[in-house]
Image (cartoon, rainbow, N blue to C red; front, side):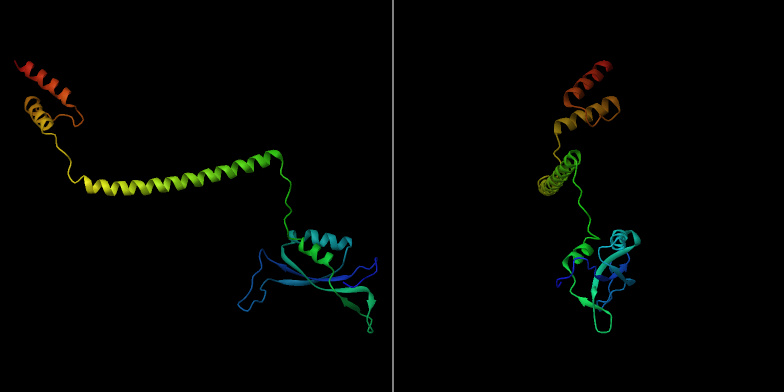
Length: 190
């Protein structure tokens, strides 16, 4: 901006847009309802308006032009001047979220959450690798084990037990127990 007097308060023309987010049509034109607002820079009205913009449902604001409140043209209207950086910065800061300083407990909690998410991601990748290995292992096992092996001695003991008792032997009974039961049945018949 060209040098201005210290007491000059330029008139700022703002365009404010309503809505949660900005929407555009196929040609790039803004679809959001919008309006133009004229305010004197660095006044109470200026500060209050910018402070309350987000709570009034506006999602975006831009500076359209700045007029000098001191310099007048030949026709008596204010002259348009270059937009000062301080005005652009003030308008840009309206919708920026301020990052608050975290307390020691909040920092510790954030670190623990970060470590937890890292561990969970490592655990997930480990589980994925384990599943892959298990799938590969199952494929190789199915090729190797075509038929279950049959113990002929066990089959003979089960058949003998069935003839003596009239019942099938339990599927988990061991050879030694089956021999003892057969011996007890034979002794009981004598």
